[in-house]
Image 1 (tube, rainbow, N blue to C red):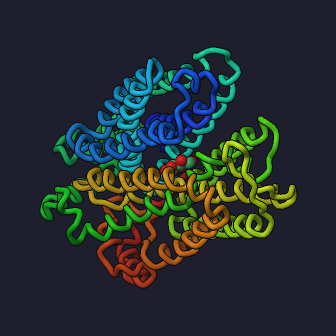
Image 2 (image 1 turned 180 degrees about the vertical axis):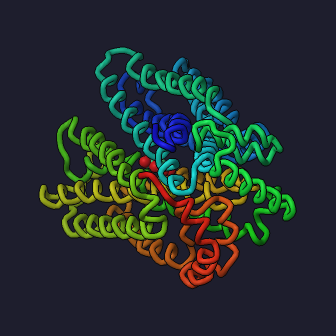
Length: 500
Ligand code: BGC
């Protein structure tokens, strides 16, 4: 057994929370197109559909805000378990819905569960990981999200052939299965060692660290050293008494809150969910014809998303957060720019009788646009997808970590909600102009990362105090951090012997 097998196991199990996140956000888009669903709910108009779609995101927003308190008070582990119960309730109400109100309430409740999961899982993973594989471990939740979206799509696709209400009840109901699996498996998973120390359960923390790091040897040097480091960090945390929501607005935490909120907002401002939610209609607009072609092109989108996350899992802890984000932004910006030019130069707008827009783009440019969309999704999947979740989960001190992450996660859901609301309107109104807006945001994000985001790879969570107490200009603060590293060289080298 490898040295980190237990850590991967625990991180992998909790990543099922990401699967629920991805599945629940992905499942509804094709359900909305199903004939039996439309008939059962009396053909909801665009407002009705908007409410049904966005109530999940609203639930996620509220859930993530509550998660900070729950994960501190009852532990990260129990927060994940409680989220599973809430999620099952929401999914069951949706699956058995007899009217629109039930469906909407069910989506909101499931959203509460997803919101709690989206905050507690990365924090839990980050707290159990040794520094050199922390990025990889949190990337597992992102990978699980992409699997969730993918599986939801293909289950929808398979079920749309069923000629009864089961066609929509099955895809909605089936998500209860992974939620139960997660709940039951979490019973056997340990508490976060950092949460245990913060709650003065030192012996248990030592046992957990021994289980995760040394095959159960309580007195292994790596266990003792990490335990000492966590205890020291918690002691300092207590002295500085940073613990309430208002502390998030004060120095020294404020800078990190701004960076955490901004990175989550920018993750959504990549426009990823425009291609996750609306790619089918964009493919249709761009000239993919036939009933199934746009749908299948969307399925391929999901596969690209899942596959392109793999390099991040393997190498994010080598590439580092800064470089990966800047390269990802460059990829996203270029692909948006090419789409904008190809659409702008060749589109010829006409409208169908039902008001839907056709851009009548010739075959050549329309294939180019589709390829660019796949390359965009791949650029996102390797960079902003995982790091949007990794970075906030690793930069805060213990006592404030879960509260801070509940705010940064809520920012993600808020921007997700807004983009979901405005982008369908903009796609129709300004077509390629939306690509241009995203291209500009992505180009600008390169400068933002370069100037303000310090590198965090390979740092212990306790080291973050040093990283974030210097100049706010990340590119100017390298010398100070290098001096710190030189002073601690022996210790760091010992810790970084990683086993890829
Ligand atoms: C984002 C989601 C997005 C998904 C796509 C996640 O990191 O937060 O909004 O749908 O990635 O893979």
